[in-house]
Length: 457
Image (cartoon, rainbow, N blue to C red; front, side, top):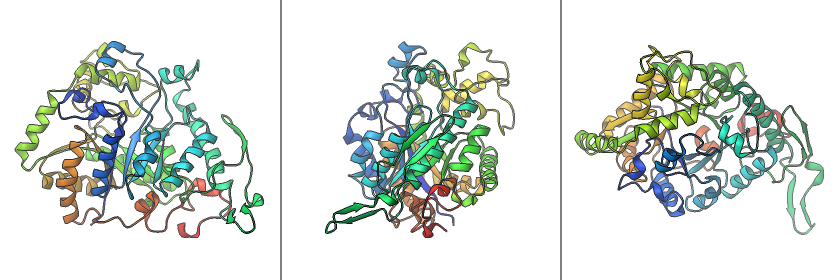
């Protein structure tokens, strides 16, 4: 039976997924700014043998309906998750850590330095989620008058990746670092190369600030579901996050990503595909259903719809609820419009989209039941769509994940669907196999290295 991979999706903010649940008495998410909350969570996940925790991140401020945004903590306030990663890694030995850095706002040189630093400090447990971010508030926060359109953002991201590969893969040769104290030779200058890059969006002349880490390039993740986003993922990503309302729609997305990967000269199995899973588990179905219904009472419909507007620029409340959800154009958050139109069996009305989003928001699969029932559903989605794993999404922090580790993980292990022990050291090895610590030879980033790693063939 195919063994799956498990991650957790989270954000350093009080609300995540279900707007309003921050107010639940058992939810500790209002302590998002305390390190001990995240230490407790990552230790729970490591006990459950999870592959990684993924911290999403973005820039901006509540420019839309600020009173509502601050009152209901609609993705505000938020902290920078990258600053917590080395501390969390020091309290774990195996769990991987993935975080977001956007080519829209970052600069390649310091970004490469940060990820190399984290890869060194974690001994190769770092992943980078590459997001071609849009949004007017983020642009304004960086003092930019214009927001690049969707196509231009991916053009910019391509340039960003090229210069990043040059820094991470090509600047320092594998044998540049000697560390010979007797000869007073730390590194050989003739083995360290200046990157001189002049692209359409980024200019850079420098050697990489960090010596090569275990993985060199962090494991690359991507979540765009637009046509351009899927093509970018198929070319660059090693882990892809997808969401779709039905098995048929998700399978179509999975097949499309793997087909595009082949067109880019890559092996389709060099990409691991994840979908979201929100699991409420109980010792009985009645217990789980009772939890779910209680959680529903804390939802805020107006906050949920503000979340949608902030992510897409579309105010659903200003549209005719009886009109079909078609012909709606946006330059940001396309995945949250296309989830209701691409590969859908029928086109919903605006009102149906509002009801669906207010009920589930950005959640993927919602599964409520016993450990056996949730494992059954997970197995069905894996077998019928070809996905490789799931990103768990919380309701109550940390209780949702504690319940999953205590109840569902043992059931998955009993079925042979999930590991019983950690065997690999780095995040890339955990996803692709022992000794595969570097980008494979068919990855575009591998073209920029001086000495290919034989273990990746």
